[in-house]
Length: 126
Figure 1: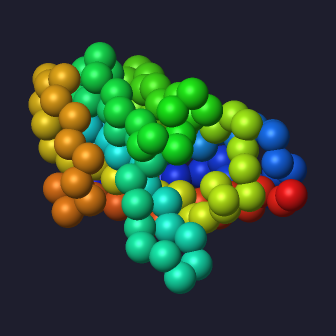
Figure 2 (figure 1 turned 90 degrees about the vertical axis):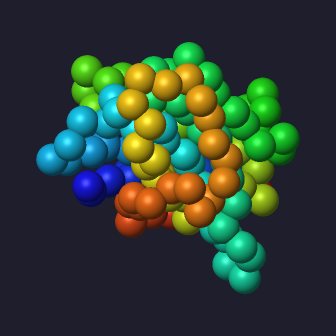
């Protein structure tokens, strides 16, 4: 199971980025997906999650109203649209997968996700 996160970059405060999480060699539609982030010197934290069927989503409080998670199972990709970015959003963003076929159950616990991508850097300048 290999995940590839992409779409990070440098953006000014108030700007937007769209992250993508693509899978190779397996179908994402049997997996719930989570986006996590880790800033320097801080623990990895959950950002947003989506169920395998896509009907259930969850956002951490500080992301509500700014971030949108979605999935296109035909393209085997999960997206994280990030708007109104703030300097405190600066971090390495990781996507992770949890096997959960045909489900609308969302799990926000980091330890439940066994498959991880390599991370993509997001830097928001003030």
